[in-house]
Structures are given as C-alpha cells and as structure tokens.
Image 1 (cartoon, rainbow, N blue to C red):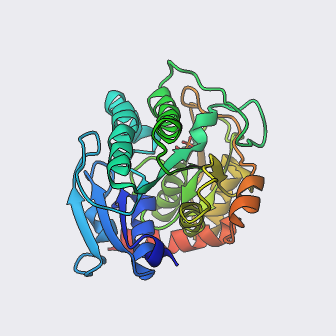
Image 2: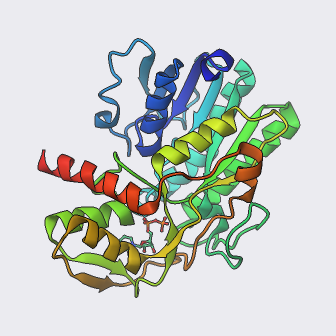
Length: 317
Ligand code: UDP
C-alpha cells in the first residue's frame, strides 16, 4: 500500500496540472503530501479544495534553490511544460530542469527518499523512429527554441542516472507524452485547451501548419496512475519508461472532434507552424505494459468530453 511504503511524499510542481491531480490521488490514498510550487505556471485554484486537509501542506518554493525538508519519496514535476511558457524565459527553463534536478536529487540523497523524474516525450525531439520506444535516442535540435525544455529534460535524465550510479540514489524516470484533462490552464497555449476554449467561445480554431502533424493524448488520471505504479515498482526498475496513450491523431482530427463534442460553430483557420514543431509523436508503451501492468483506460473522446465539461463550467464562472 502506498501510504505504508511512503507515508510522506513531496510533489514538486504540485499546484500544476498533473501535479494537482497527483496530490489529490495521494491524499485519497492516505499519504501526507507536501506540495512544493513557485506558482509560475501552477495555480492555487488547482489545489484550493485540498487546503485545510490535515494530510496536505503547501510550500511556496522555487526548486532552483535547495530544499531542506524530510520526506520518504519525491515526485519531481516542477517545470513549465507548455511551449509558450517554457519559451518565455528559456534560461530559467533550463535551470529548473538542471539546477532543480540537482537540488531534488541532493534532497533524495540526504533523506534516502526514492525520487521520480517527470521527463517527457520531448527528449525524442522530432522523432525519426515511429512509434517511439525508450531505446530511441531522439532527434533534438540543441540550438532551437524548444531546446531549453528538451535539452534541460535530457540533462535531468542524465543527472538522475548519474546520481543512481554514483551515489546509489533510488530513481525512477517517466517519459510523459501529451496529457490533457481538467485543470489545464485555459491560456497556456496548448492545443487541447486552446481548441476547447476557442470552440466554447465560438472563436476560430487555430490550426498550426496544415494540421497534419500528430500527437497522442492521454487523459490525466491514466498518467497519474502510471506515475504511482512507477513509484511503487521494484528497486531494480528505473525506467526510463514511456507513459502515454498510443492513439495517434492529427491536429486537424483533434479540432474536428472538439468542435463536434462542443457542438460549436467555430471555423478552422490556419496559422504558421512554429519552429521545430515535431511532425509525429506516438509512444511505444510495451515496456509500461510489461513492467508496470499499465495502459491507458480512458479513450481520447471520453477524456475530451470530461475536459469540455470542466472548461464550460470554468469559463461560465
Ligand atoms: N497547435 C495548434 N494550434 C494551437 C496550439 C497548438 O495547431 O492553437 C499544434 C502545435 O503546433 C503542435 C500540436 O498542436 O503541433 C501540439 O501542441 P502543444 O503545444 O499542445 O504541445 P507539444 O507541441 O509540446 O506537443
């Protein structure tokens, strides 16, 4: 049981999109949660329902600074993850992944805590292999506008494995593919939140390029479940392991599906494709299936319906 193995868990980025869902789930399982967030892209509104719960504590802290707490396990989720946010201050984005990982790994080393890194499908860059297995080494432009995130996350993986080899730190690395669900920020520029907000407001749906580029979208509850399974996995299994939904769809189909669910009159409009925008992305999840007995359970359509319901309530309020 999670709360027996790890009675106290620290979640960095705990007020963020995935982090807030993770905190909620850990508390439901009886774990004492310390949520650490600097609120750069996280929001108090994401965790307001947890404040006052005796199992929940929040610390406003930036993980590029060292952190002195006691904990049994750490989920390191702190990092801006949407392109417009991580490109706003790219130097700081790299620091969050690199200095942040050094601080979090130092904390794990001092306390003996197990530490899980939220890595990303972006470590594969614009992939030349399809779908992407964990053994694929990636195709990242090291000097492009996405590099602050991609290379930062790649270096974070390096640091995790070096702490593991050099100091015996207990590590887990998850490569999270595109994730969506309630508590995405309506203005974070990501495709699912953008399209849903545009459809609900009857505004044009902004497709980048011709909309033929693909992504594979997992519902947030499935990803949280995968992260917890990974944290509880045998010591010998470090990952990296892909967590994502292997249902690949084009941005054009995504737009049409969202317009259909909302029953919107929005038209599709075409905008320039951003630099280094990956053409295709789809996880090979054979390793997660075998090592964690995990695979997504929520279909993209179901997840989109739940997310549309959340945004229509939030926007109305
Ligand atoms: N995208 C789009 N319209 C938007 C926002 C994004 O067509 O309003 C495209 C974007 O160019 C990319 C895909 O949707 O091809 C996914 O973008 P997102 O920023 O959500 O995530 P990432 O590129 O990091 O996977």
